[in-house]
Image (cartoon, rainbow, N blue to C red; front, top):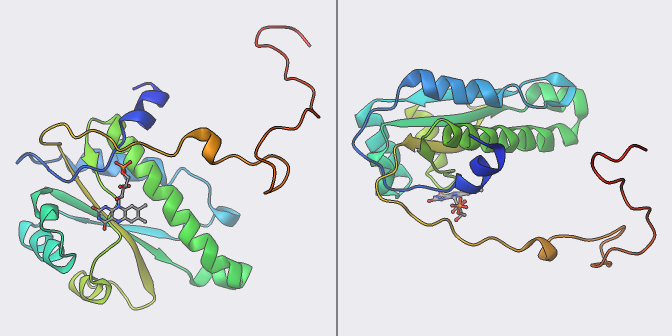
Length: 190
Ligand SMILES: Cc1cc2nc3c(=O)[nH]c(=O)nc-3n(C[C@H](O)[C@H](O)[C@H](O)COP(=O)(O)O)c2cc1C
């Protein structure tokens, strides 16, 4: 799929068809995510793939989000901070969260590209889900990603317009100052 189309089509889906997802497709999406940037190229992430209906149902209950039980597959994104903290001190903890966020975004995009739907789920009973999945104490659950085929066709919510998010040179300047040379036109030799 065209890159811009993937960005536009990615949306949070919370209603899924009763249709199995090929685990190879899920692995493909995870494989895309681990090609991304990592501080010192240290990958702190692990991914628990859950396909058991019973476990999915329990996780949906522990998230108080019953729609999750419609998803045939969940990806539980986990991270370990220890190596990054040893290497980068307190900042290593930030890096761990940032690396997970970047990987989650890549997974959502790649799943979209592969014709699947998903949602980033951050609200759930953290300790109980950790225990349920036998995740060690030092490992952090970053997100749960239910994956499936969309039932219906929900409209993606409107986003903040571009002018609402830009600043120029410093926080206080919302308009581009007339300081800079214009970039050369595409196709025009320097
Ligand atoms: C950190 C984070 C946590 C989220 N947690 C949940 C969640 O627990 N349940 C849910 O339904 N959506 C959750 N979302 C999805 C957002 O609600 C969604 O991205 C937002 O409404 C924008 O819609 P869109 O993803 O379709 O563009 C979460 C998103 C992020 C980034």
